[in-house]
Length: 117
Image (cartoon, rainbow, N blue to C red; front, side, top):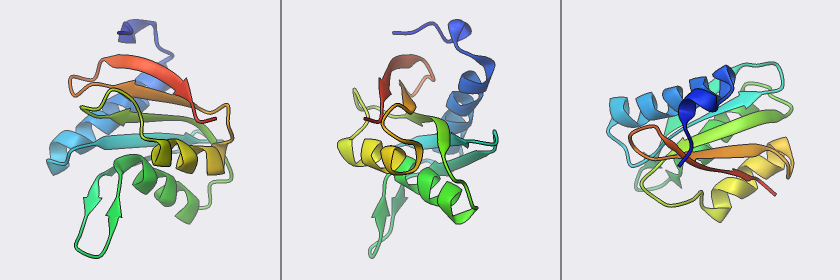
């Protein structure tokens, strides 16, 4: 586990936003990404009959749709132990292999930080 107080304030912000999205929408996961200009994009899991996206995939899609050219960081709040490979691939596609992905539990505590690569 990682003590969130040691996180960069901007990283702490995206973890908080991801946690809020999960709680507000009562979905399995919440995610947030920060683009190269510092803008953030927040999303929850999408589970429709015709469309299934993880929270992190949805946040990356929102960033792309809004004109983001790259990502500085990503965060996902989940019950899973780590980010799914498909989530890391989406982050890697926009941010590159060194983009950090913070994986937090449902209480918002960062359990690990991995790279998209």
